[in-house]
Amino acid sequence: MPSSRARELWSSGIPLSRAWLEFAPAELRSEFDCSPALLQSLDEIPRAASERGIGTAMTDIARNYHRRMQLEVDLKEHLLTELFNRQLLATGYRLAPSRSQAPVLIDPERFDYAEPDWRDETFEAEGITYSRIRVTDPSNCQPTPVKDKGSREAIDAAIHHLKCVNPGFCKLKRKIACEEIRKFLGEEENAGNGLSFQNLSKAIVAKCGPKRISRKQN
Image (cartoon, rainbow, N blue to C red):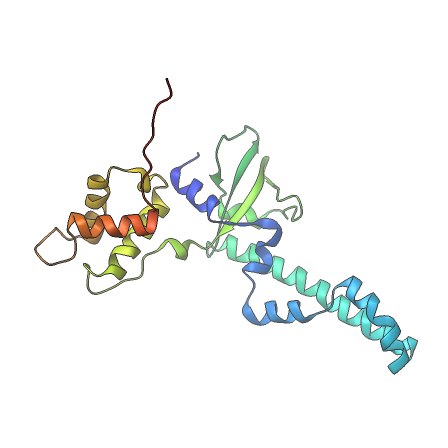
């Protein structure tokens, strides 16, 4: 079922077509980035042949390109494992058996059954088809624990989290938004504790941007 959380995850997610590289372990990502692509390998043939001979050059180029292809396979498998284990979350628009009007969260266990179409960003498992799939690291929506609940760090972390779980947070009336922040921090407004309406309002504007006056057209 579509939810505000699914919409937020999808809007902040990485398209499936490049998520396997964006979420790759740093060491493997570095190796992949340094490995030559096919066209680059072909461009290297004349120089490599003059230095090592055509036979050796072709063997080296084939070996390096094969390693790059194997890295891509391994990185895609790594992403599927992360999705299956709920380390990462996938959202997408359901196409079948019924269409969803908004992104929905894809059950992690479905990634144990089928391989997605990486280029088209689609996925089919157990009769359910998804499209426009994006991948998100849910830890990015978790606030960083801080000791001083009235600090700007704590307030910014609270606003970030509230925006993640409620995409409409920035559109709330300012008084209500301030109450949501205090409720999340578990702290009431007290003199000098940094949770006044004025202080929270400044933080909301900094994170959400100023509200615009909406004028109805006659």
